[in-house]
Length: 54
Image (cartoon, rainbow, N blue to C red):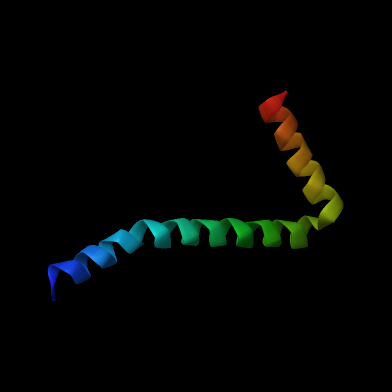
């Protein structure tokens, strides 16, 4: 395997990690929404914003 191929593969690792994290966050959002319903879900988001930003 050439050095260029190894370098290209290594440069994709951060992209794959970021995409995986984004997919995990989206999946968690969908699961919470399905479990708690929209009213409770949005109330939790609003409460989080108030707690963080006053």
